[in-house]
Length: 467
RNA sequence: GGUCGGAUGGCCGAGAGGCGAGGCAAGGGACUGCAAAUCCCUCUACACGGGUUCAAAUCCCGUUCCGACCUCCA
Image (cartoon, rainbow, N blue to C red):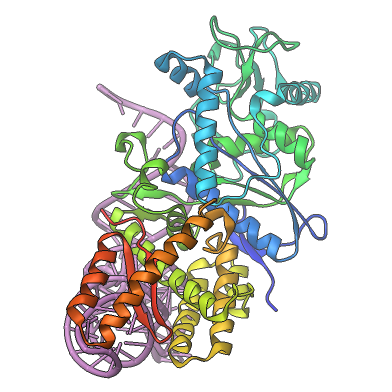
């Protein structure tokens, strides 16, 4: 039995995962700044860490998974001006958009999903502690800064030198002791939202919320902190600085997912709306988009193209088709089983691509067994495949992906189609292939695919067509 | 300028000193009235130049190109 090893950005090595507390895992994932609709890059992080969470859960851990919502930030305020809406309305609107996208991709809701604005008290307490410990200072203008020169260590995650950094440009330099000190809290500006503190009214800096909320929900130390690669600096460095200066051991391991790129570049708004999740879901189903995002290794760059997505969806439908046929033949949905090969692959820093090779093997065996009628092998293969898909969050038999309220309709449709198929079978038996093909073509035109199998003809509704 | 990651077949994507992952596409075959689905077979690789080694896609040095974060310049 292999045991789980995970990569750690801090050490740049893969090492055995040992939880702080036996049987328990605490994960903090930096979630979205809700200032625009989610694009495919945003949700890759959600999917990757959802797979990690599912695998930890499947491995027997009780996982506490925190993913925050940054609902106060410069970009949100700018957007509010642009959209002529209150900042909180903008935040809510895009938070919903993210929630919808996560749901469409079957990303499990976090154990807790704290919003920054709901944790101002915790942030003030953290700042008070940092000031008391001499790690932070309030120069009197309403800002609060962390004094980076006083830190025992800084920039250990990105391995940069403090003197190579240029000063942060987010506040008035005249109040800083050192230009590289960063803002924990920003003094109120006219018209901007603000909250009262002992040092003046203002709003949180970008980094403070994560330290405060991680402490609130996971305590002084927890197992894994995750996020996208770009968060390593400055966000995660500053989280470490704040939390360690407050006396917390903070995260024991750092995990970062790589980019989805387009035309070799990091996804950005200049690419327009075409890569927004909502747009992509017009071309493939959520389960297919998830399969695409999840099938590359989380630390590998994923070069997006519509062709690659369509191809990935084709591959997924093949697996799905087998599970559907297997379920029909077995008369019951296969029980999910985790194979040794899958376990070994996942335990090796979530080597999903390697695990997928095993699925392909099981798929081949299972399809052959359908031809030969070996139910035992069909059941074994289907169970292994379903077990793997379940961990990947791509189980087509998962109720999350089935259309609700459609069962009665499906039964009625089945009756109608069976009538047509009976006519076709009769025509075929009297070698009237013109008539039988006419029936099949008619059904195909309606989006009903017909296959003649050893068990007789079967039908399925064709999926979203490729564009 | 600093820090870091990458370059694998038509395409997508693993692997990380010795046996050519896997998928998609393509070609051939089996099955089929014809299809579809499925199965079988085939093909095409490790950016470039050196080096280490019995053996390098994998390690080392250099080069080119691509990208990320922070800068710089404009």
